[in-house]
Amino acid sequence: MSRTLDPEFRRALTARIRYYNEMGIYDFYRRPLSVRGGEIAAAIAVDDAPIAGSTTQSESRPVAIPGDENIFDLIALKPEQRVSDPAQALKIIREDLGDCTRCVLHKQGRKQIVFGVGNAKADLMFVGEGPGADEDAQGEPFVGRAGQLLNNMIKAMGITREQVYIANIVKCRPPGNRTPEREECATCSPFLMRQIAVVKPKVIVALGAVAAKTLLAMNASMAQLRGRFYDFRPAGVRSSDLNWDGCKLAVTYHPAFLLRDPRQKGEAWKDLQMVMGELGLKAPTKSSD
Ligand code: SF4
Image (cartoon, rainbow, N blue to C red):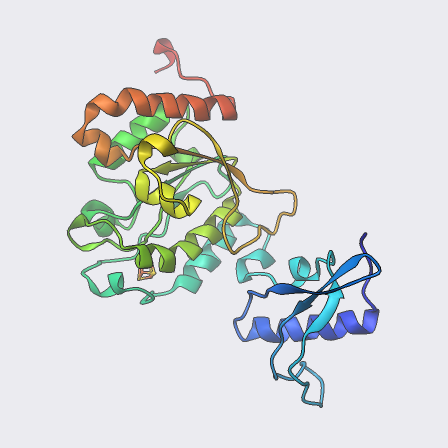
């Protein structure tokens, strides 16, 4: 049962969370504190920082709040969640990423960060592994030969590249096009999660095993991963749209793999047809090509 916080307590808690936000801290956690009268209370961990505007130094202590009070949903927002325009929100995430040096890929020959491209309100999002040489040179994902094939795959679905959003798990080119290390994926992917939470697609297509395993946080073969939908919510971030409760995720082969083994194109087409069914898309007829 939802309960309203005492206004004074709420004001103090709001001021405390804004204080953390101004320091660049947006992630909070709650832990069960006790069960009272059949209700589970929760706690947040707070440190010794004073509440903004208060003159007294608070003690380190848990703050009890009703378990289903979603004050954090309302207050502890990422910077991009404070704007309503998704294109603007994506710009804010890009600015937050800055000239990123968070993982070793920043010093392994990247020319530029490849953030993502496309419709900020797309129903369909493609997520690949990482930029290659062409992408690194142009600053846009999927612009080389694999990108051409992806464009053809998108066209075969009856839509255009401009209608979808395209990004990668890592935003800097791994040297020699090697597979990104797990740590690099883990360091970079929170920014992708924020992009997903802004775009709020209906369906994500993970292109290849690295994208699938990172997004789904599971280790399985492509044969095991393909052929079904997963319920997906971006890890560690909420959308500012409380009506968006995640999306479907499908897995298919990376276009670069399909270039190496064109016999698998039929299998990839089956995956895309499953996605088309979910989105109500129809393949263009010959005459409309
Ligand atoms: S791959 Fe991602 S985390 Fe690593 S340096 Fe590039 S932008 Fe930063």
